[in-house]
Image (cartoon, rainbow, N blue to C red; front, side, top):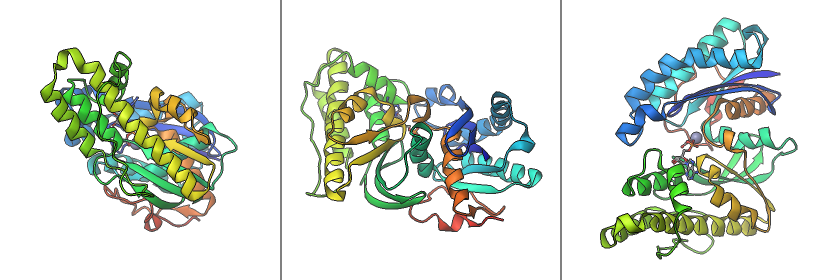
Length: 336
Ligand code: KG4
Ligand code: ZN
């Protein structure tokens, strides 16, 4: 079964063709990062306009690279939320038009279901149940993945998402947007010489809180010679938040009595985090760099498993800016 996956929830216009939820035939990502960089963050109105310009050529390119004709695909999967509403509408409308004109099923996908499904593309034997931790620009959430597409929320950030905290601290250090990868690079030149609060919350809690660390970095910066200490501040922030992440993973494995956890989302592309995860006494999986950040292949993979369960979307599918992963049922009706 060939599925076209479309992703436009934020600042990447992405389309991919995936066979049977596991094999990537093409994965085209057009990033708007240079467009938003001068503003230090995503400008929703600019993002929507740029998605409108790029969606058609990006989808064409996905077909070209896969060597597949439009008529050969069996379904179209699209991110319906969460994300920026304007950008989401572009992808959802395009997918609806394709589904209608080709007479093939439409499958609305939750963005985080996509990030987790990126692991199905990398590990051909991976099947639920397993634990999942999503670390992206908008989410820092632990889930118990009970079956394909069946998620139980175990914990979440109470304030900033980890990627968001990276971006905000990077901004304090005058690094370009999006800050995560730049902060990682800068940290390589420094040492974690400053102590920052290790916020673990109540015993047994799988929630996160990163805003206190962010404020502590701000206060630290006001006190020191920032020019001299930039790399050390970056390293201290990174080591502190990753010590929290690894401790929470240990906790989650202990509490759930599971031995396997899947990590997903943009922050999972951080090499320092990967090195720390590799030291954990458990099977910790994360996708290759190319499919950690937003892409269409992960949406096609998630769409495949929804289709397998008979879940398709009506042409009334909407963009949903605030869609929770545990309340997606109204995205679908029975396929057919
Ligand atoms: O998953 P993603 O591409 O988009 C969302 O769904 O949010 O994640 C983007 C986030 C940004 O906050 C970005 O700074 C962060 O992931 N990120 C990183 C790294 N690469 C991306 N954070 C830390 N280290 C990285 N190497
Ligand atoms: Zn994402």
